[in-house]
Image 1 (spheres, rainbow, N blue to C red):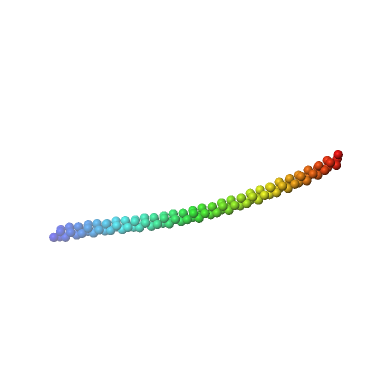
Image 2 (cartoon, rainbow, N blue to C red):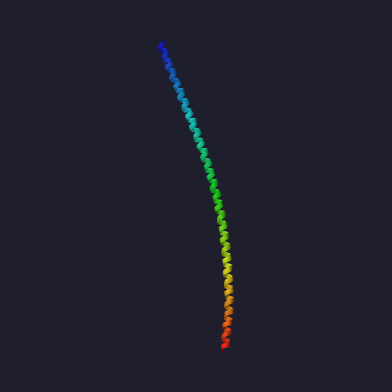
Length: 109
């Protein structure tokens, strides 16, 4: 009977070890699943944050480019107006100078 008890005790120990191993495998699988799920959540959050940042940066760049474009347009319009005024003044000045020169030559004859 003693051998039987020892064999039964050994079989029970093997069964307990198998249960323990199965539980350990399940626990590791659960932990791995939870870790993978957490990693996916963190990656999704990071991706969303990056998208928002990129979107904000893109909007800021568009706004800056729009402002810069508007400023350049205003500067070009002002420069064109200044050139036009300068040209008109130069023409008037040249006409006046031409009249003076013509007057000088009239007196010389």
